[in-house]
Length: 214
Image (cartoon, rainbow, N blue to C red; front, side, top):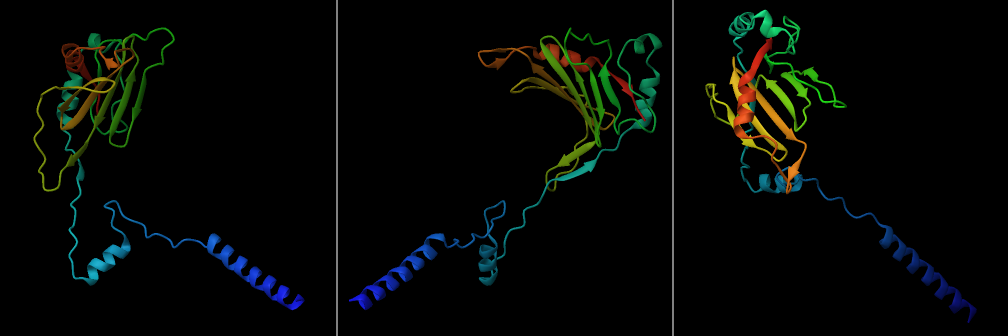
């Protein structure tokens, strides 16, 4: 009788250990998939089956050819009275890699607001101007992004207005560089930003003046 009990206990212990092993056993690792959802195993299976996977072309980024001579000529044509009081940046070899466009008139800062900020970047610059009804952000870049097989389109003098989720924006090109002026509203009407009209946004962008160049 005691022998049977011992054997039964032993089998029960072995069964319990086997059950624990199954419960705590690590699941097999799932092969990682790429951005298209294809795993290495899938690729290997396709290769074994003799299938040719499509090659997806990628967009290309290149630097724009900047007309620095025209930019320097236009900056030199601004009068002393025009320059006085407006926000200026240092010109020369340490200037941003694109001609800098900034407001031609002094920008008033509301009491308690964040000060004007200007930051050169690797491909252009970023400028921030706080306002009462909206903040203004001006970006300049020399990066041109083309779709696969697409040739670089010639720049035009057009001002392109768009409504955004935070307000509005106006884009334009000068001297071979691209510029974007963003208006970020501080108040919304029924969840919709309505702080600036298309006419006001385009007028402000047109009044931006060249304020620095290499």
